[in-house]
Length: 285
Image (cartoon, one colour):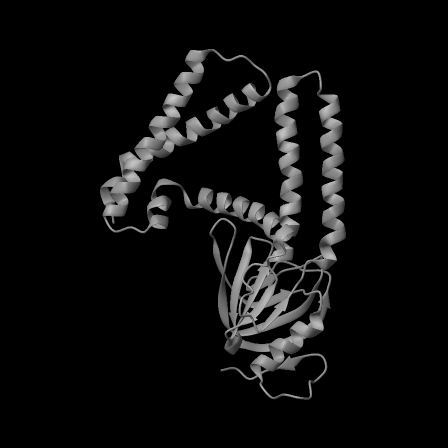
């Protein structure tokens, strides 16, 4: 690993980035609002950004030559939380394209695909409509303030895209049963593989309240979960910012909870023909 690059060089690059990137956004907003900025200021800002990117490119090449993968080298230059947030935003935007093209994510070769976005659709469309109305209203109110109008307009339009992206991510990322694993997902920020051999019990259970508890993962859709998995071996859940916690109870929802419940039950206990009502204990591997 490139130990020498992790000291003053990387700290210096990150300090410059933390100062330069917000300043660049401010300059962009001012230009968008029609504010005239002296050429020397613009030239200096662009020179700083070019120098920053050039220095990071040099360090990235050195890290690659010392054996780091592309992702590892990038992680040395950019904090993990920043990378995760950027990745999440890009995933939402990509989901919009998948939604339009009707191309679900990660379903190739699946034994079972279980959509779970239907019960939140009305809420998400309503929220997007409210944001759109707010965008139009603020655009009219700030028509005489070009700088504020431009900044608020960009933020409002992005908010509408963000809300639609959240729903698109839920639509295009269903729960997937394949290869002896249940891939449990929610929008673009939760993606957990649950080995079927580690499922100790599965049951249909409609719940509308979900208190926070250690060792539990609640993936409610429209404030509802309909299937509960109890695991004999905890699984790791990686949060949006990279935090990891272990869970042994997973509650989730599907548009057709009966189909999801029966698919998991039958996958864990092949040949079963007579399901028992309510709680359905399963043998562990």
